[in-house]
Image (cartoon, rainbow, N blue to C red; front, side, top):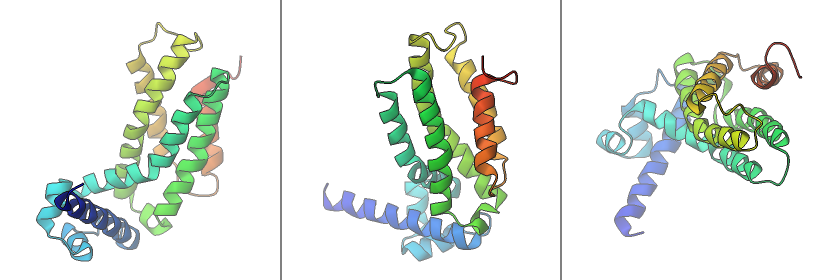
Length: 193
């Protein structure tokens, strides 16, 4: 990287770090681009040039929250184990890591801001969509997932489940609620075959 690229990356990191700090302390709604720029010691124009909007900063935060989990999910996908074991490991990873990551990066105060939670979960779900596609395609190849159902229909179904999950309150029962949602995703209302 040349000096310009290093400076750009340094500014981007400062902006993201400042945004996360302010979102935690003031919430998404009550944080302005001006405040983020001031804390990051950059101009407001830099934020718009690099990210485009405050919502895009939340997307970057979501990418940070999801990076480790997505990497581990891809590693599970390549393991030499049964497909159903892969799914169970991935769902378990999703439940544990995402909630841990969210609570690691965002305070309860920040997560009480419904605008932040909405934008954060929308972006987390967008980042998960590609890995879901990879699992679906593998499941179809291994004849575990019905290949007559279009992948996009399955992704839309998962999006609906994720939307339901994003409405859950962050409390002690969230892990149990997510596990129940995953059970519905895999086995439906009737239960395991």
